Amino acid sequence: MTVANIIDRRAHPYRWKRIQAIVEATAHDNGVEGADEAEPGDPGTSVLYKERDGISVSEAVAWATAMPCEVTLYLYEEGTN
Image 1: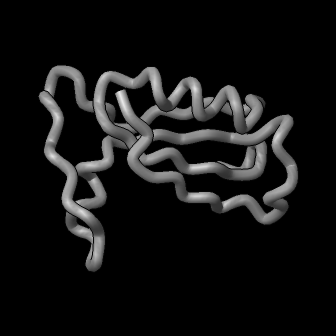
Image 2 (image 1 turned 90 degrees about the vertical axis):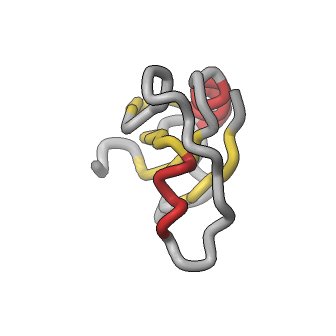
């Protein structure tokens, strides 16, 4: 589908070989003040929360893009969450 937003919460943003990636449906962000509004996905295909650890930034973007709904991709230091 689509990566609608990327939130980078890494303390070392130039480390890209091994990170932790988390995705959530972008519609989860609709309640945040100032957020753009995303269309809620089909409940059968919406992503509540998924994570992968020890992947590269490139792999994280490809993985998030393959989700069945519009997602927000969060980037963290490897093993921090």
